Length: 338
Length: 232
Ligand code: SF4
Ligand code: SF4
Ligand code: SF4
Image (cartoon, rainbow over the protein chains, first blue to last red):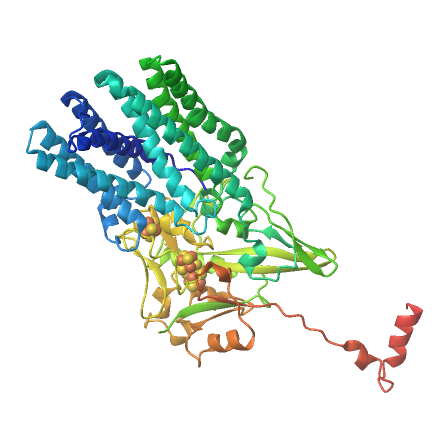
């Protein structure tokens, strides 16, 4: 699939926004149980303003994916069937209640109102994240995406971005929580690594449809695409198959792994074990996760193979060959997702 | 419920692209047009087509066969492209099962095309909306046309008469009968889409000429023998 930069931008901005708010509000929430975890007022405001700006920038960026930005409001109409519609509703509502939470906090409204909006924002944020992930996970024509791993990784990515951003915040405002957030960041990074590895390994195990299935012809006949009706590319060959990306994937995927997991894990573990709480490390951790996740999302798109590519002979091959009158299913051959 | 559809005879389709060309010609100037083109006379011409013809070769050399597959929206009965549309711009009509896009509501998010396993939706970069075969809805109901012209443009133009149009749910229709009699099949049956458009499979016709020729009372019998055995 062709990676749309506007959507990658949305993942990163919305992800940081929702992740950061999650931990900011979580600390407030714990005070309800008598814990002394609340961040200083300034920290909460900085975080909320940042989250608001980010989700706003995300929405503006994502609108560049649309052909008609001004009609975007119409996307609320199919809430009952479309995950994209749900995403639009939930992320819009998330931005709105986040603003209300910020106002309630700033004007020191009653704690009830503050927590009320906090909890609602929290729920809406995660519903929006879940809906975004489901747009991809529910697409049964891109088998690489069509798995719960897509959702798990995606939600965890928000936690990775959020906890590492919050780590930098604790450094300035509540240093006693640094170790907690070092641990949480470590935890989410490890989970993310596990989910991503599983996502990649699964791609080698998927049983893929063949051109014979697409054309509904018996499996014992080799089929070759002779001509696709045009001498140049068309929408179907550019949107669903990104040649340049496929060529680059082999080098981009390791970079994504290194920046998203290896570097941050190293930095976090180093700070944790040595107790050397250096702000530069924390800032670097977040930046590395952010840039790495951007590349990781790019890979996620390029790794996706749409079944319509079968008609164009651009789908990873699982061939059949004739042997003594019956066919034998050949192993999936994918040259690193080629 | 009626379900209008195309049935395409792969046995007679010669892959001439007339249906695709006439589809483009009709639709670019009719209600659902234009079908924008980019760099049409240049090195990299690109454009929107509702119908594209693919050619495939089946079998292993020397026992190969070539066939052509005209592919336009199959007006799936369980169209997966419809529920994913966030605006309701993509919809399936109750009265005839035709899947359409309302250009005034489409926000150009492309999600519907991601949800079509057949690659039958194309985004128009000029109009910024999703476009697809309309089953020539602006012809089949047009009462200003003579009744025999109230058919899709691609069906009318096909020189090999490989295309049929009608209601596949109506047992009296031509399409219902050909699907039944000639084992009409659909593309990608296990994708759960239940396509309405059907294809008629290729059949091999074997005429046993030799038996006739080799009868003793055939006046050409001697001629045949000489050619066969003397290699004349
Ligand atoms: S062929 Fe594709 S665009 Fe047409 S109805 Fe089926 S899924 Fe939708
Ligand atoms: S591109 Fe248009 S028709 Fe397709 S899903 Fe988006 S809004 Fe609906
Ligand atoms: S039915 Fe009409 S719109 Fe569809 S492929 Fe044929 S000519 Fe084109």
